[in-house]
Length: 323
Image (tube, rainbow, N blue to C red; front, side, top):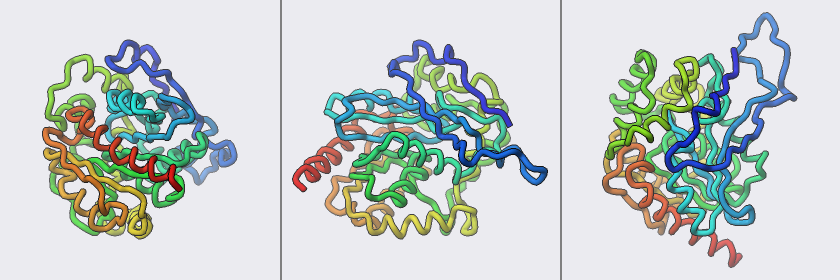
């Protein structure tokens, strides 16, 4: 198993994305160990594993954490980052391991749901993030909502957009199983085309190239290929019970929780109603259905999404300032 680093020249002159690159080591020297005969290379915890992130805005400003999903990276939030900063927020937008400018493995076995959670937890703790206002979409929700359940005291408000926290207790849409098969069989894996197929607006060639930039070859796409297989679709999947336990905690989460789903995403359609029914923090929030948005609503209706989120977050900041 090797750790791959995308050559930095792949990220030159990306349209709308000129943020300073920052990195945090989310590997663990404490858990690093020599490989025994009974261990596979994917079991070894690397001592150095660099996660890239955008940190934009005043360090003393309230924090918005923007979490992307499959197969995107922080580039997805480029327009929203600038708008949020202009409204007085500090934006943190990481690239998950295997994506964007972050380190990647050349082995699908290196990626598990549990490891992605561990890397994200280390990221949050390393930056000392508290009073977090979370925006999460796609896998950003599968990971981010688990963080909310584990550390509810760290989060001030949540905006969930085209995401879910599946347990495998209910049958996933057939479209998702087709997506799983496609992700394993297609060669090469067409990252930008996948994103284009799940947006309403046409991506200009330069933007499509920006989504392809993290992946110089198929060797770099192991994380992209693995994510679809990690979604719990059966009741006995390895993370199904952990997600059920997370739902129990989320069902007591009283801080502002707003849904901002799009009107044109067949995979997550209806998920907003589940959040609104089960999470007490949803009560009284200005939930929205954003018109003209596909799965990647950040591309299609990003300004509408951040404007809706800012309404929720500003209210949370005002409320916290009175306490």
